[in-house]
Length: 178
Image (cartoon, rainbow, N blue to C red; front, side, top):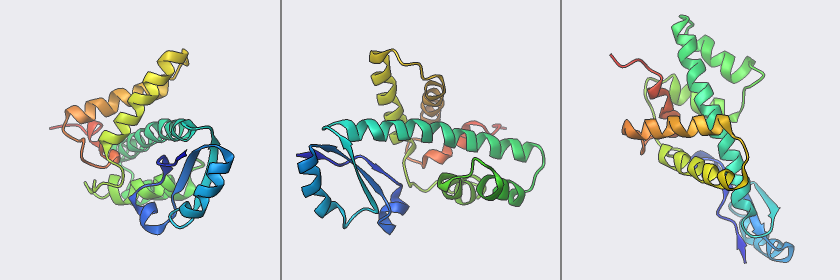
């Protein structure tokens, strides 16, 4: 048996068959499962014993959750400085040393579009994953201040009714409500 539900990639990556599947289980079981999984994923990685695929997914989402908040914050900062959307877009998706596939996926179509938060990964799922990370590290005594702050912000966004929107809608908690 393998556990292969943990994947990296949004619905866009699923449609393109570009997801990364994180597999937990024995090496022998992984090799058998790879034959099936190769038709659905770009990359298939054996992480370790059963359950380790989930741990790998959780560390990915701990970073991703915090990163998208940082993107939202910098989009709002750029707007407050009076920078044009095109300058902000170029900085965050082409020029910054912190650019990433996520900045390309979230900044132009979501954060700068004026409100297209169609779901690629629901905000409620990011909050859930960060809750799991928080629960796991509380048993291990590992400090995660950035992830803990991100969790609080996603909880706040859920209280604002953003659960069913893409997690890039975290930007809405940074926009001044008038």
